[in-house]
Length: 387
Image 1 (cartoon, rainbow, N blue to C red):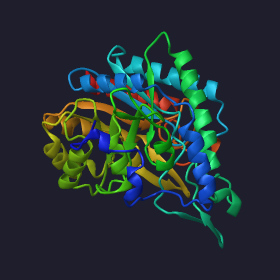
Image 2: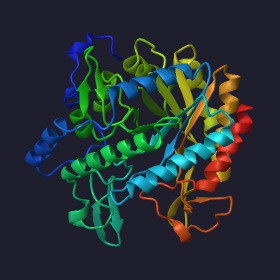
Image 3: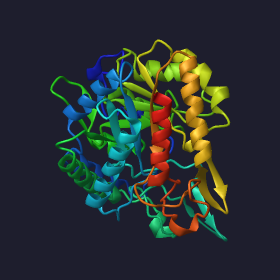
Image 4: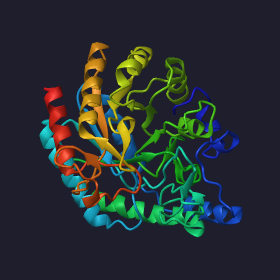
């Protein structure tokens, strides 16, 4: 367990006694309770033994290996699961070839549960009309309207069913080759709690995904999300972004991994190309000597608006990544991986490498993704940096 207290004292509902950010307010408490009861009795999305296997693999990355984490910003209920899994697995394979070390590559996909999104602004305005912001298909609908944007707990059941189907499809596709593990932000705590299961040794595991991460907006050390993640035994991540102090990061590491267990914590730098050189070194220093993996998310800190739509420039993504490799090595820390929002399809959401117009295929549900060509270019650059 990841606590300095008696692990048997923790319970998946412990987060309910803490202040919680970024959770929807459901209008019907009885309907929410009914959905939670159904999820508690539902099949797990992943097997505990597979999450434990990923944790061991991540524990070895500091010595040898590299983490490739990536996929959609947000999954959609209208996705064709089998096709999507097949195409994303193919992109992982192509990127593995570009990286040049397939044997020691740990692959973690943003899939099978990435249906809930934190938002900076909780209200969306179109003209003179305001409605709650879209917060992912597991919470509300993308279409702009009062009914569509009202949080609906029944959406958790649909998200769970699709996630189970996705995980099963991935198992079939990858059974004779390298495994692809699943991940998402551990944001929607009623869903996560209901899918938490106890292993024979008494430890608790999230069975919604192999790997969960703590988002940039829910990092209050005494808050609900840190409380929940502190009690599960899965490998977990912490998004480290602008304004995070060394003391705050050290406190989160102490709370989430007091035993300094290899493979438990992955720290994900998401500062942006213009801030990483100023903010990352002090965090590397405060975590040096800990059994953590540092990886880079060169996407989120580089988001900008272009003609009213979110985009990212491949050039900025590349500069961010190159700075991360240089800074970690200068600090004597291994650059252990990359976290990308990417699509195997020919989307036009990030500018650069043949994309100078967002109109042809701007399809993201939330944030812009690299297309296949752009993702492979980044993988080739990583291969060069690792050589």
